[in-house]
Image (cartoon, rainbow over all chains, first blue to last red):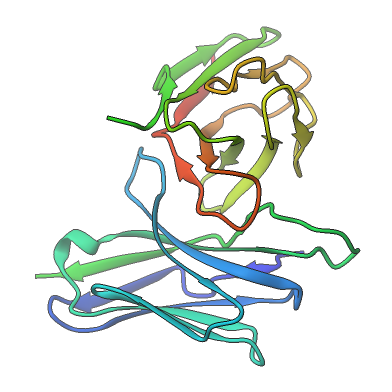
Length: 117
Length: 113
């Protein structure tokens, strides 16, 4: 059962516009969320994270929003640049549903973002 | 400069052979991890180590083994018991075990001949 879901396999936006990548999770005990960016044949690069005590975290062009009641987070990239074209993974960790701490990251399947010049 | 080095980048194995993937980090991180990525899938955790001389099974540990004799090194052995070993393998580390960003190497692609 997928605990972290990225329902859009791909997204295409124009350069300069906003890119919004979405992620849903089912485990209400998750309390730490991250976004990674991955180019083909390379390892993922950490972009930004957010703790469940916050609902927004910003770093330059990247902002992550967390809606705990909806179990939803999103990554906003403004403005989008062609170099942002990559696969974006959402990940989460926290207390496991069966009890006990669980700092293992659970990843979504990724969304391929294409930014067109 | 600091980072995580995985070698080799491409690896070929004959059926029935064990093969070891190398992962070295010079970030002075306590925790290290091995993931597997299959096409169209997210990363799945194979093994993790919170600290030197310790390691724990992840979600898909069957057919794999690890060791953590040095802080800098966390090699992964893919044994002949792993029925579907063809995949992209990623090693990661974090400053400590906990809610910390994990930083990844560039991966090793393993293929079966």
